[in-house]
Image 1 (cartoon, rainbow, N blue to C red):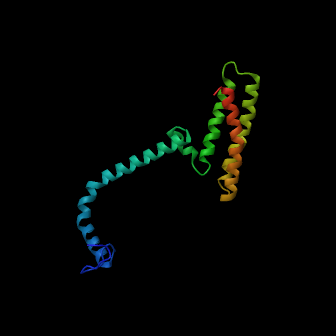
Image 2: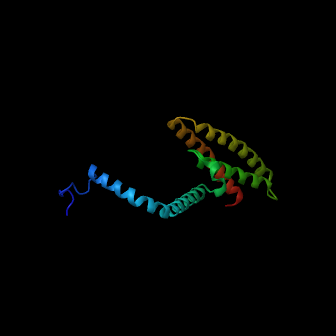
Image 3: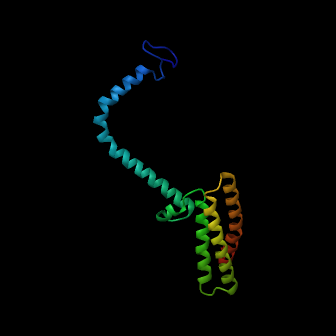
Length: 155
């Protein structure tokens, strides 16, 4: 029967008060028997979906899944970039045979990254327009540091 055509008791494809009442009656009768069987599978599916989402977000941010909670909020991705660059600068300064120029770059870069991290944290409480402008500015400051860092690491 085509949609929109009238049946004897209602319209096909629409939820009428009579259809809703019938549906609730069916759920009341069948529900208690089905819920104990379906609930564990539904919980397992929800848990698996959440785990997959967390792994995806961690991979996208480039962090371990255990540290994912540290990078929440609108500036989470920027904060993850800043922390990653800070760790790389520390490795650059501490590697054997690091030149004085590398160590100076690492010290200046780490100081700048500390300020950028503070700016990202402060931007979390700003109105949308200002927050976006602050994040864009932070990203603009972070890009040259990352480029120089990769160049000094020979990548």
